[in-house]
Image (cartoon, rainbow, N blue to C red; front, side):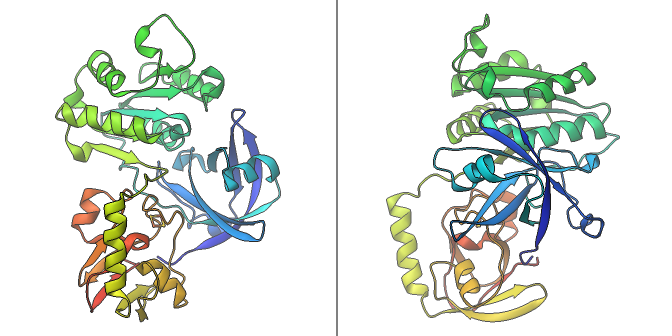
Length: 357
Ligand code: FES
């Protein structure tokens, strides 16, 4: 897929907490189809700040059936885009928005009777909110359990919206808040979602972990690692554990050196790139296939350039590539030949990648 950015008007900026805002976009009728999304997906936003193009991915918090295109942006210290949103963005402004993408989702089916569980931390609630709203509305017999970690009650994004959902789906939604800087009566809930707390939560609050159809994890890196390890150690099938990362860890020195050696070897190779139905040969002139394709004038899509968002995903249809970070891909996608082109270097002549596949 080439990058399909559309200029959308901001309908509303909704403060969620002191640090988080949701942005609601107006979608003109002729773009409704293009902006149809699946629960848990995200949007890439693009704007110019201080003369520089800045792109960021933000998850949708709404459900597909709600006809409401809304993402949530939490301010982070030094975050160029998130602070720009918090300080400057207002209704009526125009923002470039890429059509929805992302694989932190699953197909929902009205006939199913499933139990889903999510571990969310901080703004990691955003795609989980979309999944909860969708699962409970589209599958009238399914249940959802949420473990949600925050600093204190004032920093809980969607506190009221979650309480509203709980009222509406009293029998089918369970919410457990874990607060790091506030003491309640139950020890288990006093503190972050560490490995130990994840273990206890699964053990004491989930009747039959093996019967859970899907586990969703989104939040700060250490929380995600803790939840994932807790599940895998309990023998939960990896295919049922869905993880959405917002940031990447620093690559190890060894990996960085290895990638640099591969980049040097690959200099001067050509790569065949298919994008929007057209195939072109491009020289490998930059640090990765994405940058080389863009340097050759192809509008190959990207957002994070850190191996997290999968916006730059393409399928290798010929030859072999070496990939550094691969957070944004599932094991199935890797097995099917998909790579993150922002992290990929051709391992020889004759490599072909297809962004449309
Ligand atoms: S641009 Fe985000 S993974 Fe490549």
